[in-house]
Structures are given as structure tokens and as C-alpha cells.
Image (tube, rainbow, N blue to C red; front, side, top):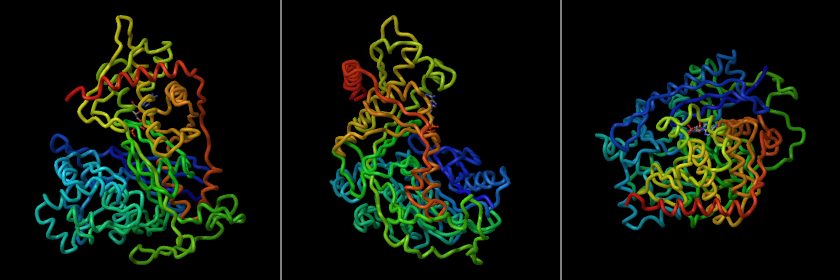
Length: 542
Ligand code: ADP
């Protein structure tokens, strides 16, 4: 019987399920959008039950549309929108409030008060993060403070907290398992990334009862099995990582110094810094990339075969199903679990990346489809001196100016829409350049190559310009589904579908490589223009 890995990719706007084979090919994919709730300006929520129902529906659809059954699935990997916070009743399983989404700014004032109390250094040194409403801790506190009866119930141990991975696993196991992984825990602003445990001092500051928090497990680990009633038979849940960390893993950036950049609505760059957390001096954050059994970094088992499968990838013998009445399986006690290796990353994010193209499309009507931008940019030799700084919501890393707005410079009577589209694409590459400069300065050296993914990485003009401006090779994998693939790899390692990191590396396929060829003077001139545009943009709206 053919065996596959099923990934649940629970994103900010949609729930997706993808089935991968051992060569990382997509066998099946299903996707469903769900409701965004905006109760007031700056507030963003999701209904946790709708998240769960949409996720379950797409998982079932991904299987049934290809005639697959739970017996075809070696394990489930989960990757999720990070930081988004759910609190539910341990006894009834009902959320006591909507999920507060990572984008939600409702705890800004409280965060300001923490900063004014001088807690920034303490939080940064323990969690690697800056104090910001983005992270889960203050969102959880908000629920306890603002939902009637919540604090009292929490003190009695009746409430549970989770990021989306935790919520999904709890639902998948019908309330038996309350866990998260290192990568997600490191986004809560409550987890000590050095001691690898919930930080008592921070919990006290935020006034969060310890009993609400999930157990923190490796990112590649058999957490349990799905309740048999959900898919007709139990399936192992075996891998978890937050979306950006999963993408880093899916890009096979396993070595210290390797970097990936995801070009979506915004831009997220993560650099693997190995087993040492690197503290940023340039406005970036430090995070846990993943924690996995050390054994997977070793390549000692030459005769290894996927668990329960022969060389052709079909099953040797029926696997003994370890389900019991409760759908719970005890985590395997193998030597693979004994020594966990935690890998750290530095991370930077730019708020507006592909969204600048969306803006030109939807608000200015300059193009019909985002992908038209490539041909339009190629139709002109340069931007004719036009620069766009897409600071629509202020500027994130490394400039950090929440008060500015977007700008366009260098307009002349000869500037046409192709120049403007080209300037928008180039602004994405320049922002990525600034992030990589900051990161390389923190890390101590420039990377050999930049791995790319996300919707806008399909644009060859942009990728070539990116390589030219960075002066490094830009490498796009054959599969840009790196986020889901990363979660699949984490799960497949724990179930023995893949042997180790080297096995996964062998399996990785390059799609395209862009080599820098812009001359030095040209590069310096363009970057000088960009820097000038940014400096004139900073503080615009003060
Ligand atoms: P997200 O996951 O943030 O929704 P995606 O990874 O799906 O984003 O990428 C979508 C973004 O990429 C959109 O902002 C879109 O405008 C942009 N985009 C998609 N294709 C292209 C392209 N060929 N050239 C430039 N931008 C693109």
C-alpha cells in the first residue's frame, strides 16, 4: 500500500491540507478560506471552531479526492499561523473567546506599559523577542482580564491556552493531548529560549497561571494519534512547526548560516544560527527554529528503510495500530527521542512585499494580475528614476518606523506605469536587501545563497534583480510549498518515513538559480537612490 505524509497548513486566511509522497511531490491538495473577524479598528479575530472545522474538512477532502484512507498516511505534520491565541474550557472543549490573531494590536497600550516599566531587556534576554502585541503572552492576558469569569476559572485550572497547533492537536485527539512544539512556544513571549521552559518570572509579570500552558515537545515527535472517529482510523500526529520555521525546514536550511526569504503579502526572512541563539543589534528577533532529536543529524544507518515499507515505498506488513479506546497512543520511547537538539534562528519581517503589487492592481488598476508585473517591468530598461517605499503600515525591520506612510519619489513627465510597476518590484528586493544586511551584521557574515519561496518568488525578473542587488545567488526550489513540506518532513522523520536530514536533503530539488551579474557601480547607484528614498520617508507622518 502506498504511504504518504499529510500536512495540515493552518494559515491566517485559509486552512489547507496537502498530501506529499517520499519524493516531496504533491499528491493531493485541498484549501478552504475562513472568516476574518474585525470587531473594531486594529482588532483581528478568528473563530477557533471555524478554524478546526475548515481544517478537518480539507484534511478529509485531501484524502477522499484521491481515494486515500488513513492507512495510506504514515503521519500528520502541522504548520500554523503563529502567535494567534486560543483559550478554551478544559471540560467542555469550548473556546471562551475568539482566537486573537497575530495581527491584532489590542494590547498595544499594555505593551507600552511593560516597556515603560523597563522590562524590554528582561523579555529580550529570556525570550529573544521585543515586547509587542504581535506575540501571544499579552493576548492571553487580555482574555483573562476581559472575558467574564475567565480569571477565576483559569486559577481553578479549568482553562487551557494554546497557539493554533495546540488547539488543532487537542481537537484531533478529542481533548487528550495538550502540547506545543519549541518553535511555537518561542513565539509566546512566555517561553525561555535558553532554559527551554515556560518562564516563571514572565508568567508572574503577565499574571498567567502555569496550569493553562501546554507541554512543550520536540518539533518532530509522535505526540499522539487522531481520534479514530475523525478519519475512520487513527493517524499519528508527528510533526509541528510555526509557518516561517516550517518554511526554513522545508527549504532544508539545516546548516548554520543558511537563510530563506518568503515573498508573500509581507516578507519573512529567517537565518539558521545553529545551536547558539544570536542576539540582534539591528532590530531583528531571536527565535527557536526547531527542536528535533539529535539522531536525525547523524547518518549512521546505511541499511535503513522507511518504517514498515520496502524499497519500492510499499508496505512490508500491516503496521500494528496502537490505538486504544481513547484514540491515545503513548509516545514511542526510542533512543531517537532521548537527545533533543534545538536550532535557533534570527528573524526579520517586512510588512508590505507582494502587497505593493496588489495595491497597484486593486487600487490603481495598473495591472490585471500580479504576474503581469514581470512583463511590464521587463518592457522598460529601468525605473526611470522612480522609487517606491511601500511603507503603507509604517516600516518594519530593520528601519522600525510605525509613524511613516508610503512614498513615491523621482516622478517626471516621462514616468509611465511600467516604470512604476518596476519600481514596486524593485522595492521588494531593496527591502529584502536591507533585512539581509541587518541579519548578516548580526550573524557576522553574508550567506552564500538566499533560498526563496512564497507567491512573488515566481517572478523571475524580481528574483534576478534580487540576486543582482544582493550580490548573492538566489535559489528557488522546484516546490515552493516549502511551509507544508517542512511540516511534512518533521512528521516523516518522527514516523520513519524519512531517515534523517541527509535523506531529506537528497530529496530536495532545485527549481531555478539566479546568479548576480550587475556591475558594482550600477548596484551602488541604485542602492544609494533607495537609501535616500527611505531616509526621506522616515518620520513622514509624525
Ligand atoms: P500570502 O501567503 O501572504 O497570502 P502568497 O505567498 O500567496 O502570500 O503570495 C501572494 C502575494 O504575492 C500577493 O501579494 C501577490 O500580489 C504577490 N504575487 C503573486 N504572484 C506574483 C508575481 N508573479 N509577481 C509579483 N508579485 C506576485
